[in-house]
Image (cartoon, rainbow, N blue to C red):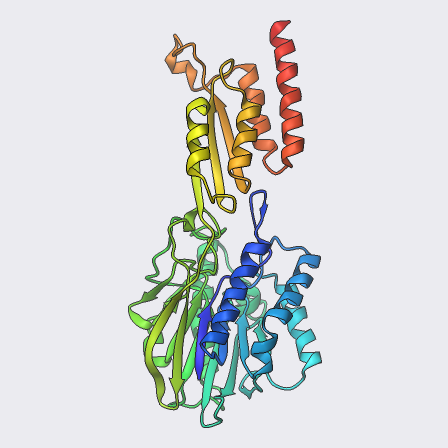
Length: 411
């Protein structure tokens, strides 16, 4: 049985003003192409299929895209095993799971031997079995969604905690106990190849510059010391940085695209491995995925920097760019600077600007950092408030503001 491990698709996500749908769909199509080229039997997606920013209509279109992209894979008997992450909407995923059960009843419950050629979504801790394509042996799968109170702290007594630290401690305990409970299922057999797929932060993982839209205080970090001996492979999601934890078969695949500036230097990939009747066969291979460049650009002198950037930025029309602009009133036109930068980097996702006075330092430097002119205060405020507006709206409002400020200063 040949398997591909991926995670953290975040379909229909946004980065600032940019809709990432097309980027992420292309990444999914690359995964499907690898499934075809590598003759993959099981596609493991370890959580965060969807973005919490996705609208209902966008989710519907995404499911339709899946049907198109994975039709060949499912048609030849490939199986997709997925589970929910912390960014997946629990209500939507439960509804989707029930709808799939109605469309194709039979299989998917704890301990079931499930038929191939389908997509299975685990919205709660799940144990299932799958025969290999030659029908010579079984593989056991434990699918563990992200640890939340509604999934793991069963009953009113389990959800009584006094502070976030106690809640996280209870969740860690419940997560680990749930795995052992599933391994004690009457159908679970020692000696049969077993795979754990989990959307969780495991102690010892190397986190990038930041977790993706979750603080370290909110996150739940589980202990994975026992995983190495209990499973032939551990497919982890949640940490977007690809890595293995102490043992080569305990791996984070990483996300399929660079999701924010914290992942700018990441090399995206998927993991491919093979299981036989006695366990893992051969080496675990890491296959690269192309990804969209994300970076920051700082403009200190528009008159000098804009021509240089225009010459250097050939091929940057798809790059995701965070712009930091410094300009001098009376010397540089902010409107023209913003216009030229939008032409150079049409997919800028955030930008800020600050006017630099040519008058030199203040006579009272201690007061300088705490005071701004009325005009600068207005410009800084509008710069933040208008980030998610269209270029046309932003330009029109900024132009109007500059005209009003000129009238006020002239009066």
